[in-house]
Length: 378
Image (cartoon, rainbow, N blue to C red):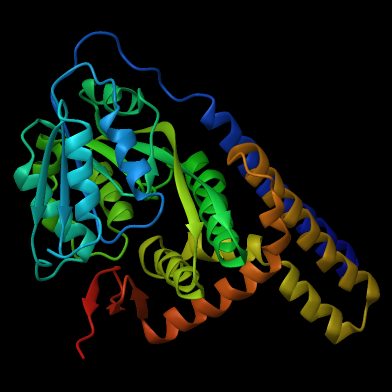
């Protein structure tokens, strides 16, 4: 068989895998478990917060409008006594006096990231046996917490992970940010999270306090760059099942280049340090197969092989459009920037692999071989 025929079949195989991810993700989003009837045990929603943007109030407000059939509270955990989100929290208290709210402000705990430090102190303030860790940029429907916590009533289930759908990106950098998260979460993580050791996606998750204590508390994952991935891995290692769903909206808004590079750096660290060589090589080969095909076309000066590379990129872009349009509910136009996102990710992956350094939320870290982070002083 000639080399161009081999490359064509491989292109069709790898492209087919991307479309398979889309189809499986679409099926998974239609199978989220319904809420259970009756009263549920008390739940504490812990919101780690740093800073605010135009969407922050609406996102936080959506958790004040929950129709949860049981005791309910929200714990807002911050690091800075001058954080611009604090006036928003006081506004929420005035507007929703019927909702029990707590606000705690503490410096970053040594050995943890800013987010996990906020979670640590939030857990200390939480009153109830069920805990929800939820990022500040998540916007939820009124029955969201009820649906998220319901699967935990089955003793074999140790963690329930929501599926964040990123929307409303404004501008090139925001669309790149949105595209990266949606294709990663909805078409890579969602179809396989219950089968492969992938941890859980960022955003929002729920677990019993007893399970958190069994895996070692927030300290067990607080020093990891991808705390959500690590907590999912720890819960699986403890012998519990992970349940997926429901979906919730994460508003992207405007983003700067540094936000995109930070996101891609964290994604690169997942593949490089936390998921193992087999998954990493499989992902890189399937997602970027058009690049070695183009390299072969340059060596052989073959127009047909060059066209095969374009075929892979075109099919991948089409799959990304379908993911954006039918899984995330956007217009899908961000898929036009697929090749730009590819270039940025590969550059970032190489940089993180060589330097083990990332920049995240205003701080620089080194990442060890297991995914732990160490702040770089000075």
